[in-house]
Length: 133
Image 1: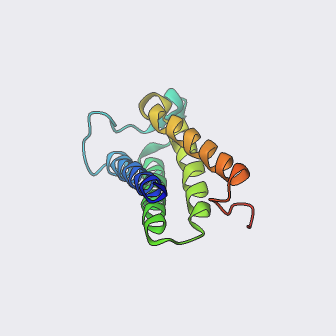
Image 2 (image 1 turned 90 degrees about the vertical axis):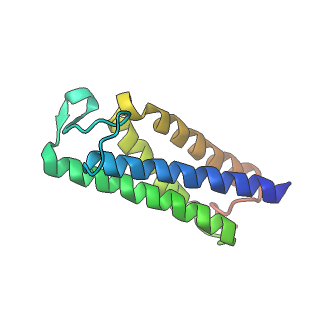
Image 3 (image 1 turned 90 degrees about the horizontal axis):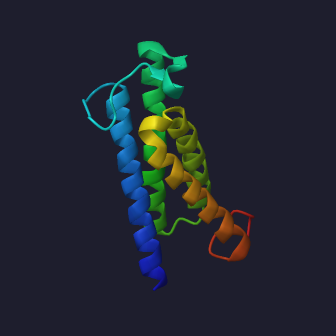
């Protein structure tokens, strides 16, 4: 049962990372996606980044996506310190999805769930090693 739990969790994190890659392709823009329209302004139009700024923003989507995919692989391979990568990826993802809340609010909600799960397991079980166990 434990292996199934970790396998499903790793798969879900990997899928979340692949969705982040869609954000990279949409905001660069390398692809046209109806669910992630290209724009140069965030925060509902209050923060205009321009083309170069949006490319930098898209690189943050790529970094978060690679972090989630790396975490997924690390869990499968049994790397003990995957939690740090997941924590950083989730925090980065939370910030970038919050900046484009109208389009990416589902990602923000998922990031909060991931962060709450990390905190819960870190303080209530010995499954994670965030406290240096």
